[in-house]
Every structure is written in C-alpha cells, then in structure tokens.
Image 1: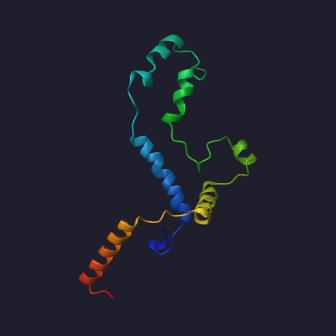
Image 2: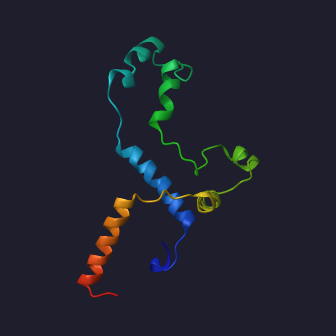
Length: 129
C-alpha cells in the first residue's frame, strides 16, 4: 500500500507475494538427510570434481533455490534480448492478467449464510442499519 493506505498497487501485491514465497523458502531451512547431503556423490566425484553433470545435482538443484517468476536472474544480455522489462513492469502485467481472467469460486451456501449472520449480528451490536 502506498500513501498511508489511500492508494493500492496491484503490481506491488503481486511482487510482495513473490517476496513472501522466497522468504518462506528460506525459512524452510536446509534439509539434512542422507539423500540431501549426497556424501556418496561427494566421495565419488571428489573435491575438485564437477558436480554440475551429476544426476543427483540435476535432481535436487531446483528444490533448494526459490524459483521466482518476476525476478529475472539471467545475465544482462539475455534480459536485454527479452525486452529489458523490469520487475515492476512484469508484476503489473501479471496483476492485469489476474484482474482480467480471475473467476472467483462462489462461496458454499452454508458459508455465505454464516457470514451473513455474523454481519447481521455485528450490525445489531453496533446499531448499524
């Protein structure tokens, strides 16, 4: 939110969602299991070996790093070749797409009745008409 909550940026909400996902991934921590540690692979390949071509690396590498959709981690030349759009432009584009295509699921009748009852009770308690 901007300007003390008087202005709202849908693109910023989309970007904040990505930041929250990245933070959640960090807070999950680093797993410490035999499969994750790959001690057998380290022993076989050795300290100066190439782990990038190992099946274990390929199998596990994407799971340990967040995979942002808005942030571009490519080298500058690739970013420029794709149009040089910044994160804000991409976030605004995603937000526009959501606003144009989102079809909300209707609430179950029981949930809608419960919500209506809660609102009516609050209105009575505060004498709101």
